[in-house]
Length: 140
Ligand code: THU
Image 1 (cartoon, rainbow, N blue to C red):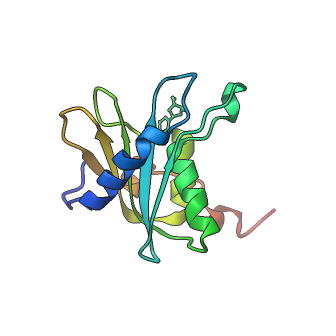
Image 2 (image 1 turned 30 degrees about the vertical axis):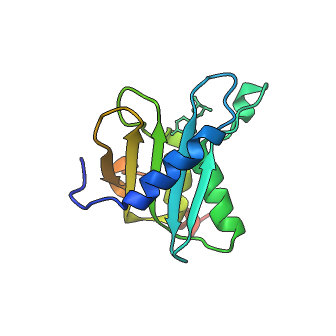
Image 3 (image 1 turned 135 degrees about the vertical axis):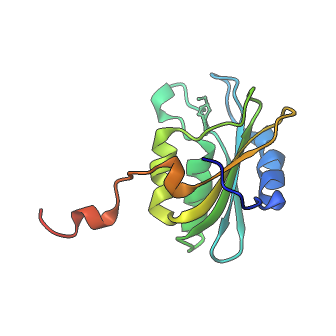
């Protein structure tokens, strides 16, 4: 279900601005992602494909890696954009990667370069039952 809060327009702009740097010679599908870390910084990335297709990296994964490498481990909000008919939805793997660093209430905005309104949802609505660290706390 869509969230009523307004997404940060700077994040959508930052995702759109970085998108042309995508390395997507196999799919031809360029994706840009930008996230706001709890440190206040914006981290941007693009999808980086590989001749060995499964080795490709999604834009969201790159942005998360950049945030963590900078010493920040909390995503406040994230935006992703592609030239898709409807707002681009993060893949299941990326939802899980985001869930590691985003609280239930964090906003995820899906956008398209085409004339369609972005869609904003909460992390918990995008991945209602994620695998989390606490699942491993007892037992083994
Ligand atoms: N892709 C992303 O980078 N993020 C998404 O949210 C959807 C898919 C990439 C992976 C691959 O390089 C291309 O888009 C086509 O699947």
